[in-house]
Length: 43
Image (cartoon, rainbow, N blue to C red; front, top):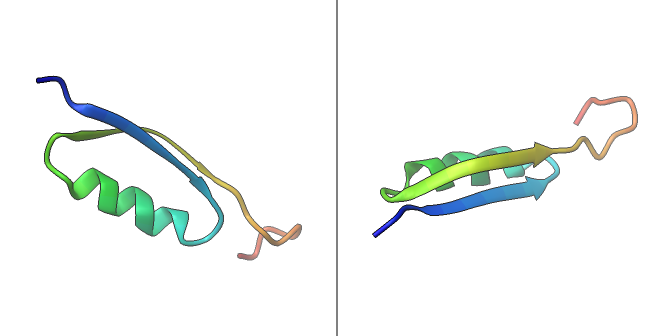
């Protein structure tokens, strides 16, 4: 069986989601788009 390929898009906590997805055996994180909710880039 091939690995499940997934990605995440989000602000702030998407970093935690990406780390959690990478920790699951058989899941390959192929992309992550992490966007700041703060126009100054602080969050």
